[in-house]
Length: 180
Image: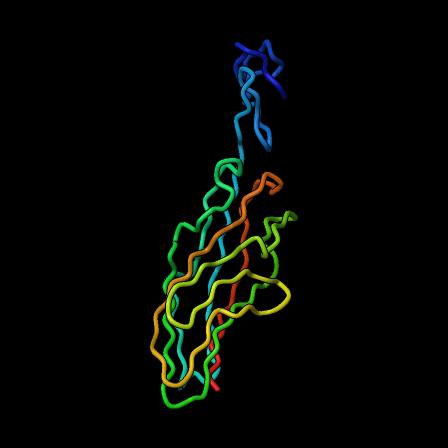
């Protein structure tokens, strides 16, 4: 629905009656496009340990949320929890340790989806590496050798787009630390 200059939302004269008019991508107000989009993305982070007696991982936040932002001015949205701390401890004398992350699928909100590959992370800390989430296979997050006690930081980013339907999106991520 478009509104001419001088018309107001809810005016009986514009056919809107007493209710408010809404549009998924925006509404025209006096000839100006005003973006209207609610996009809330939450990822639940969980951990898994292989050889739990010698290897441990601790993640500083169990959820990561991306606030709704205008894709024209914010093409890449930073997670509200950035940076997320990750501590990896490996005791004993294993040869190598490897940290991976697996996504349970795309970000979903009802029948709408955002490809999980639109989420990337930038890593800081010894042995940690930056990457992009995938629903096909676990992605490499870091690797260490011998006895390890390191803390790194992951900064998550969502590639923003007007093509995303408004909604509350979520997906589970599982971090797995393997020491061998």
